[in-house]
Image (cartoon, rainbow, N blue to C red; front, side, top):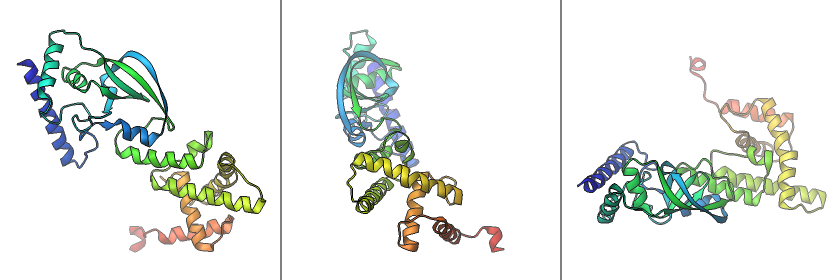
Length: 283
């Protein structure tokens, strides 16, 4: 009876959470667990190594390898299809039977279940905090941080593609960041176009690493300094986004790739005209 009650309570909480998420128009949080394949695809897989058996926090288990539709983000069952198996494990846990370790992939500080989904679901339902797991650590091209839901994966995906085309490192890698995922594609094209013009002008070839370092030092940093001095960066605008916007406006204005004070002044005037008048200006 306790095991049956545990399952019904877990299902009820999942249904209520899904309903609340629908009313908030927020399906990313509870609709289903995170997909390991989607996360690794977005971050870029470099390799993996077995890290042994550990005791890991249940709260850090956020996704699945192959059962993303069977459990929500908190590993509550999304249907009654596996009720019999779930209740059998719940009875075993309540009576103190030995439960074998689950198997997980670790990506950063998060874990994705390869085997043992029902054991995770039962453990969370019983209010446990830790679970024993065989852990395989996956190394990724991008640092596995800031992945809280599916909505974060698109940004990671486009950033990875940009860094594969333009291999920024160190300070440059940190500075070139956007909130709009498609800006990463525009930036890659901008850098490659700059490198093409530079190679034609100098009559010499540069590899990708040289292209990235030279563009950052010779183009990005000086232009961002000019943008800051001219006061044309928005209050919440990232420096890289300001660079792309101003570069686009510059080319539309003068059809050239040169930078000078007159160009920045023209951009500032254009920005001022584009801004809607304040209420006090209309009166």
